[in-house]
Image 1: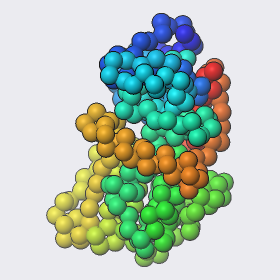
Image 2 (image 1 turned 135 degrees about the vertical axis):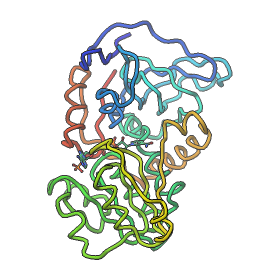
Image 3 (image 1 turned 90 degrees about the vertical axis):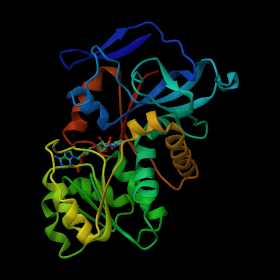
Image 4 (image 1 turned 180 degrees about the vertical axis):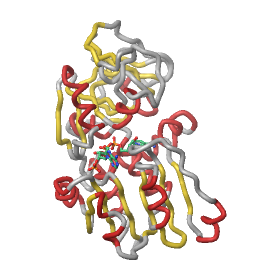
Length: 315
Ligand SMILES: NC(=O)c1ccc[n+]([C@@H]2O[C@H](COP(=O)([O-])OP(=O)(O)OC[C@H]3O[C@@H](n4cnc5c(N)ncnc54)[C@H](OP(=O)(O)O)[C@@H]3O)[C@@H](O)[C@H]2O)c1
């Protein structure tokens, strides 16, 4: 089969590999499209060490072509979307059956865009910070894959003020389509907010922005930390200060959740998938790339030059 490998020199190359066979609890998927996400940047940059050459790709949409022991044979032929730990940038990928969902009701391009980002956005709002009706929410990287979904889940949960932060005014115009009440460009944060504080803040940014976010939490507010787009520099925080101010810092790691509690992640993914299928939540596919252009696509994501969700056409 054709597959894209990330080589020791950080380049992505199209190559021929043996087709994988599903083990117990796994399915093999003939991949039509794969989702591109920030994890690709982290893997390329060495933040998630993997042995190279490595076949990346964490979000696959296509047809189940074989199943391993313990998986219902009737799933063969199912049009599915799957969360994978590697390998989706290939003609055939293996995925845990428990994290492979029937997506026959979705366009396969949208099914590829579902990926990890949609259950993540769902969990950040609904199971991690548990946004309540009437609460206010601040979302960084508001025009991105997680951001454009989180605003929709926050609205569905009843948030009555949702503010986004993005890199430039074009991104602000784009993000405004998803239900934000206000979108700031990065230089305006936090001063343009006057003395406004939020019950929930989504922080995939890190560094000084993390401190600024804690300052902007209302009493009993929750800061959800789920990435380090700007920097991996450690952020020192006084837990005693948080206690005195009644603020909470929560973290979310979907990759770890898939290993420790796959059923919980699967449950959230199913709830999120239903909202997408019913048309309540829109996954916006804004770019489709060919395999030869994967390196450029991932560089665009690293540069902050993307919006919504990008996908790769495999077959
Ligand atoms: N913890 C988990 O389980 C989990 C799961 C999935 C994703 N994530 C994390 O969620 C985040 C978003 O992932 P995604 O795939 O949806 O990517 P994305 O939001 O589509 O892309 C990242 C966005 O970050 C913004 N950005 C780039 N450089 C920045 C900087 N220096 N400071 C602030 N913002 C910057 C850019 O938009 P603007 O410049 O317009 O703001 C860019 O579009 C990533 O940190 C990813 O690792 C975590």
